[in-house]
Length: 331
Image (tube, rainbow, N blue to C red; front, side):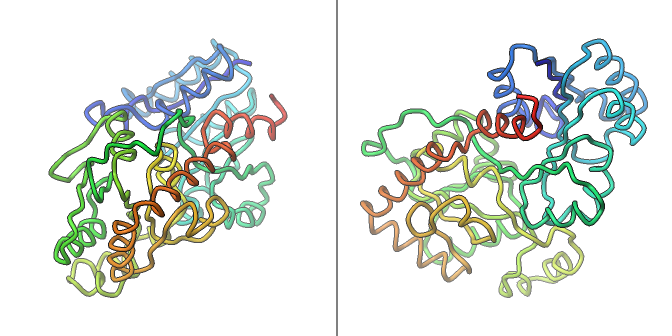
């Protein structure tokens, strides 16, 4: 089986941001499925879209693949390019953020692919409403969990967070600090800065509590009315819904204890209160942090169950992609 992944090699095409999720997870997993993986990295063409259309077509026609695998974010490629490729090959796109991007993005692009995946079960009816039938429901995941002795972890942090510094995230970390809870933060915009993939794995494993804070517009009234800017963002931002993301699976795959905000369908993947802890407000988050920091055994048992769940249910991209290809009836 020959596959052409049309991916960004680096995060958002910026080498300074490090390897992309597409490279670290999808590409490496595809290589374990078949030896015939021929990636087309289009980072260098992000500001040369006219050239990009010709280059990708020329590359694909030379390879003559069984599948062309896209993960598009914006208008990188034209509808004409997608249609040309779809008419000659089987094309697949992994759509992200359907919870808030379906109406202004996905519905316009999905018809130009042979198959589309969605990680949001609530969007399946929307695909049907536009007459598109080749939708595959899947989920985000992580790497295949390594063997970890979770009973002898040398903890380095009480509470940590890995992710970009955005409005609500910055506000909630500040709120916790004012309440006497220090959160060690890593990622773009934080004092510690971005970290490598290996360092991220180590942080998840060696943190007593890993926070999972969304970057969607928050409905927390305290946050909204804490500044005029926040009120404006709340009223204007299209990103008004939270959804399951890769981080929900990455933390337990490293054996980390996860404290996440609640979002619909989280219970489809983890047993809340047994494999993952959730919070619903800033006050609730403070209580949960203090509760679990005082209960080492309970916290460890939940981390172990979350880790075991990622193994038992195959929350890694190798298994996820195999399942997608089986549903496409090409594996």
